[in-house]
Image 1 (cartoon, helix red, strand yellow):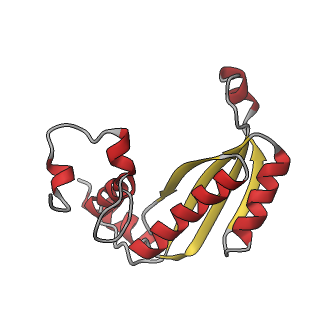
Image 2: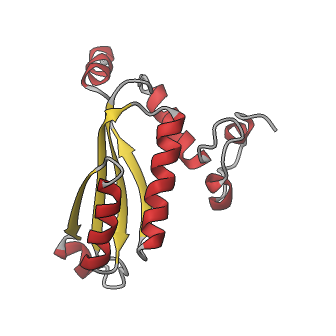
Image 3: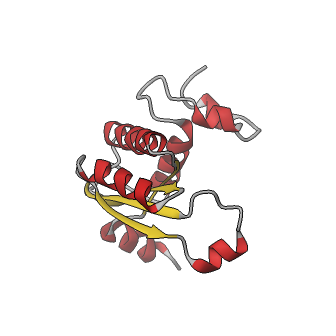
Length: 151
C-alpha cells in the first residue's frame, strides 16, 4: 500500500489506523491529515510557525512536573486548570489540569513534528496524564494570501 493510499479510501480511517505511522517519515496518519489540511490552505510546512501541544493531568503537581520536563526540552509551557464552566458541564473529566507546550521557532517538518508529538505523549504518560494533540495556524504571510484570494 502506498503512502497516499490511506487517504484515498472511501471510508474514514479508524482510530487505530490514525495512530499508525507512515513508513516514510514515522509521522502518525492523524498528524499527516492535519498537515494535508494546512497545505491545502496554502501553508509552507518549512515556514517557522507557532505550534501548540496539549496534555491534561489529574493534579497540579503532576502537571507541573510534566511542564518542567517539557521546558527542559525547549518548549514554552503553561499550566492551568480547565475552565470552571467546562468542569461543571463535564464532571467526569479525569484530568482537570492543562499543560500547554509551545514552540515558535520551527517549521512543521516531519522530524520536529514526530519528535514533539512523541515527547509530549511520553511525558504525559510518565506523569499520569493524557496527550491530546496539537494545533497551529497559518503564518501571517499565508493568512494574508488566503484573505487576498477571497472574492
